[in-house]
Length: 79
Image (cartoon, rainbow, N blue to C red; front, side):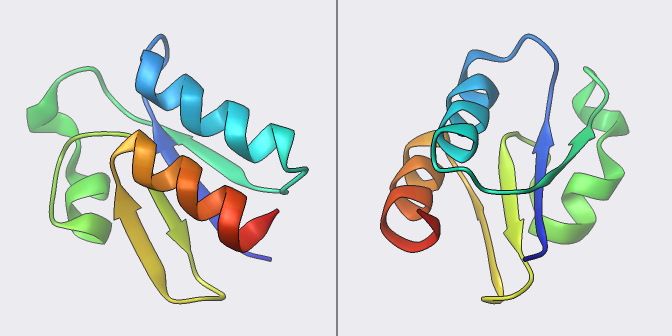
């Protein structure tokens, strides 16, 4: 599986996404992003947005933001 989570250290929404992935036993990589939105070029490149969290599931061709959507996706698709 090739899952990447773009996250900001200390972000409560990012922690929810991390918790969902950990709870489901999903192996994933974390890319820690800069606190400044203007410096989040990699996030913008993969998702056309600069906010986090962003989950990229290369195996399923899915890129999504919003922690609630990520948690639902993890529970319904990856768990």
